[in-house]
Image (cartoon, rainbow, N blue to C red; front, side, top):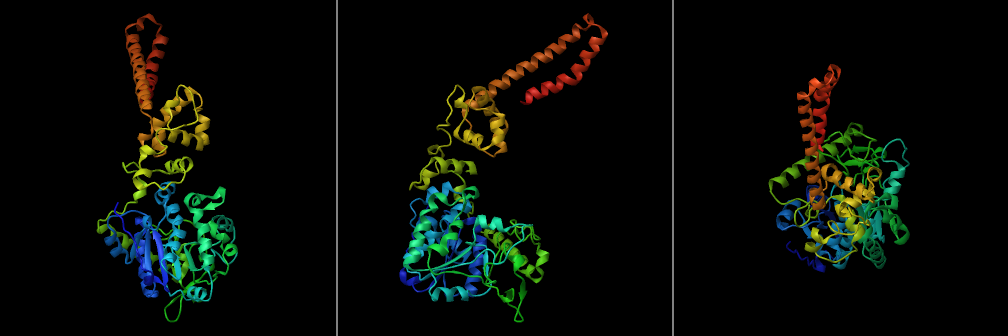
Length: 477
């Protein structure tokens, strides 16, 4: 991995609005559309993309996206690679947000505005600029500003659980109060920026419910033209002004947030809602179809460039895929560290192949930490297999080798070698049994005259109907 050391001179962004987004390489097409809209409506702002990924092709990616790219590893976060392993791609991207704000303010930015990559500006952010220049420390937009019925998704309760404010947009001004808030917020990101609704967590967003309490002069912007998305579209009518400009509830449309859009499902506004169809939006449907078409074109263009766009942190350095269970095991068993990429993503150094599983008996060597962790998380597996008993552990290990690892998409390398040896041994035993059954059947033909006719007929039926099926089932086990 090459280093892209960033040294933005203070004079470059001092006393200016700095607008940035954060994404991994898979969202660079969305970032390209965002940057294009920012250049149109905020031409004087400094535009940056923080890349929550690794790349040796930064100059090519910058040309594609249309803005300077800063590697996430260069923002001065000691636990960067630890967090990349601990979190999935969404959690990791959102966890970098407060650190990106700190990075920019340390380099002299007066105002910093974050926008999700799947946002598109429709007009300048006048209301935000006025609020920040008027003394606000922060500007937030709530998900909804009117009650929602509970019949369809998203409901009010779901929005409460994920956060009152949508953090696809956040504007901050540089101040001592803002610095203190960012310090508090960033302290929670290394280990607690995850989706765990039962624990009251939803990435970085849920913490912002406390921003109006913790940060003086936080402006909750209720303008209907800001952050228009699936969660509030039922309350905001999209239309054109006489001049042809887009409006929301008669007010200028500042930006659309296309969260959950799927280009291959054109009638779907978002995978996260079922309140509206595209046909319900009237003239506003053109916004979604136009964005989907341009996003498809941007993806095709990036593919044609033949750049490496796979997410770096989805695999170990040896190439094995990192599935969600491995991240959960890492987060539980490994304390935060400042180790580098080569160490954190070395599978042999993690708690996946060898480690305590809390079980001691003659068959415990058949259960790897990954297998034990899956068993603990799934009640139906606990009901089917008692791995605290040797026979139960043996049965679970054989099931996992034959079926379980495929069902849960877990690489075979996480199954102990002793399990494969046991499986071969058992298959050999079943083959011997099947052979004996067939030999017995053949012998019965020679001695059939010793039995009454009714018994012989029953034996023939058994041989024709039962034995082949029995033998087949034995061979397949």
